[in-house]
Amino acid sequence: MAAKVFESIGKFGLALAVAGGVVNSALYNVDAGHRAVIFDRFRGVQDIVVGEGTHFLIPWVQKPIIFDCRSWPRNVPVITGSKDLQNVNITLRILFRPVASQLPRIFISMGEDYDERVLPSITTEILKGELITQRELVSRQVSDDLTERAATFGLILDDVSLTHLTFGKEFTEAVEAKQKSL
Image (cartoon, rainbow, N blue to C red):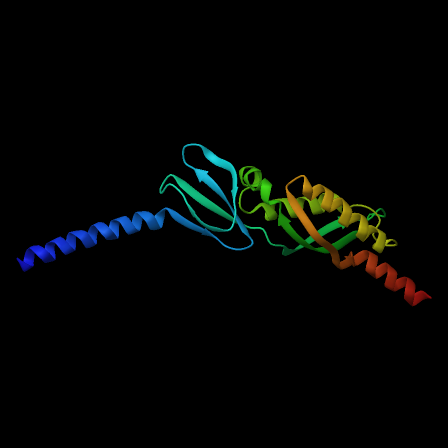
């Protein structure tokens, strides 16, 4: 009699463990400041952006892709040329975040590492022009142009600042030689 009771308890425990595993695989959490996009193996990426909290999904069919929607800093180094053909090394510090409603499009077109694909290319594209004599004006214009260009990719730039600006070796040597001759 005791053996049958223990056997029944064992079967019930096994059934409970299997049911718990299925329920656990059907739940996922989206932390504060994050959003999720659902990838369905049959229908592809869903257009719905899931907010914070605990949510259900179909196990083994759907998968959540979690995105951080808080502002993140990124330093982007760029080597560009001035109008007088001098190399200029610039490092921009960009605070960025994705537009939450555009996360499905961002994921489909650029993937989870969207910032590594977009920010260096648009920064190089925008950083052209006269940097030597008009640094403040150029900094403001670069910020405006980058913000506008990033918006086409579904990114919000909270801040853009020039943190490092050096000129090519030849230009620096020419300036030093001119200073010594004065």
